[in-house]
Image (cartoon, rainbow, N blue to C red):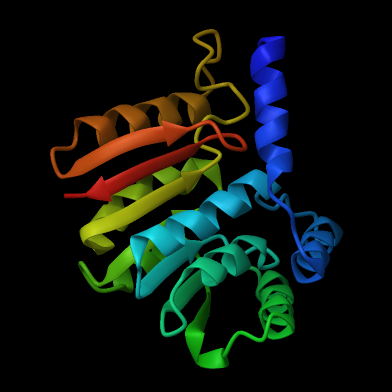
Length: 210
């Protein structure tokens, strides 16, 4: 990374500010050994959720609620977020964060389970936004399910899409990096989608269903 790019990336990440609710959720993440979305990514998620005008959203990888809070702050007050995590302690921490932010309980549907088991049970073309922020090994399969879930005009967001600059480095050929590169190619060549990648955080892959 050039010094100019590094400076711009640092400025972008530092541009957003967080209040005490988000700060506490971030602290709980670290206490649980979770890496939450960066401040810059969180701000981007809020903007994307607001711009999408989504009424129904799905999040794979609840963590301690940092990304969910960011999405909910951009979604309409009547929108519902379905968030999936296999760790009940993560879901408990996220519920605490949502309660501190005074999110109405009927706006969040928290599901404990493996995404590979839960996503196939969700309804086709019933969602306006899907965020994947989970184990990278499972992301390609989750992305395939996500495209099925999206309505026309729906937005898929994949966090950590550049995997700490590994994806852009041709010398990196480990299975997960190769799978992410393949995912990028598959989504880009899918005629149903318009695709782009933003450099925020460790990369945000965006795909809109036509």
